[in-house]
Length: 312
Image (tube, rainbow, N blue to C red; front, side, top):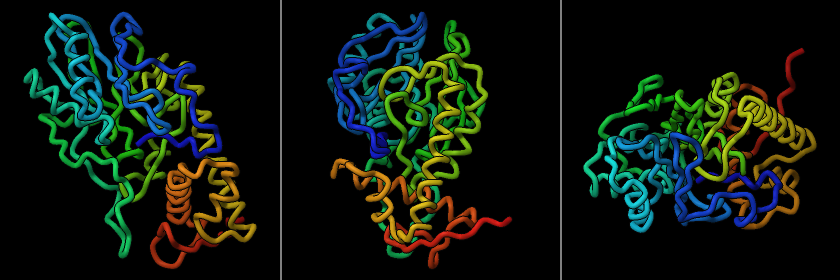
């Protein structure tokens, strides 16, 4: 699960400005990209899998359980040895392919740990993240700062919880690049869906990326993020503007998630209303934790919310 086009942007034109699926492209001296043909309004043209290095290589995010995509990845590295299968997070468009690829090559699966929620389910709450891969069991979980290496390349884990709580980005210092998974993407903002995701954690992770030195981010969907420091700062500001808009709607008298969605996301495609509701709910949960919004008991998707005046 990735896309938050519910921000009011139009759904993407999958033929315009996005990498093509099914084509292996060299995007830098150390990186090749192959996009899985699972394009949708929620995945852009598909999940980006990346081959890092040459001779002895790593593959970052093998994608969904798509046998054809795994065949294409193996064809892309014909004559080379796969030494690491690296996974950023446990959504079903990113991690299940790791098991298929391991079965074909024997390479270890490393990176993020098993799927974990940001908090327990509240009473009466249903799990909202239907896209979670709960079967992911890596051979090695990489903590923040830990790395795997090959000839001429290093992939160092950067903890970026929020979209999922086990989300990792991976720096490639030899290329001044960062594989940002679904945490930062150029084509769209990122959905955060409680209880599996956390807006507070997501914002903290954005803070951690704002001053990094990489010159390009390679995301899990869509094209590269250029000028990433500037881009991440703008993304952080966009999220703060979104929470300001939500509080303004509460001050205007809206009291539930759907009322806020109708007011903020005017003209939104009906297919994206559910995703927009999750985004608003994630912001409301964070605002309640910070004492800026009140609700009866724990925040719920179907709860009622009221603004709290800021001190001073």
